[in-house]
Length: 119
Image 1 (cartoon, rainbow, N blue to C red):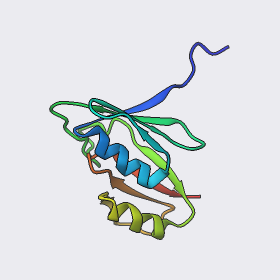
Image 2: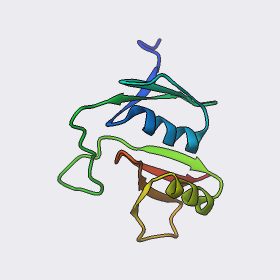
Image 3: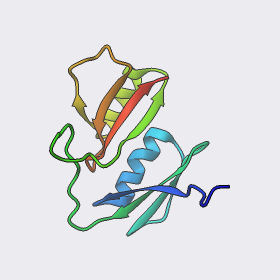
Image 4: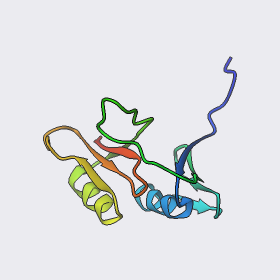
């Protein structure tokens, strides 16, 4: 028997509403709330929440001397189309060296690393 039930993944950031909007454009779903805490209800998946963090410093990737803390793997059918979309939404590529792999690494507008992964 489990001791707990999974609730939500929470990302610290400087602007919760803006970051929730970025992920809503990438994943779909409904943004709820404003201010210090914003939720994104993702269809068919776990919710994401965004919490204002004064003094936010994004993780560095890759950085062998510093932890990235976590990252999201987002599964897509077409890497090129998904890449075009996330770049238009403000993502920054973090790793462009090997385009033959089945994943690509980006930073969201607040600096959190995430991967687009081929299905």
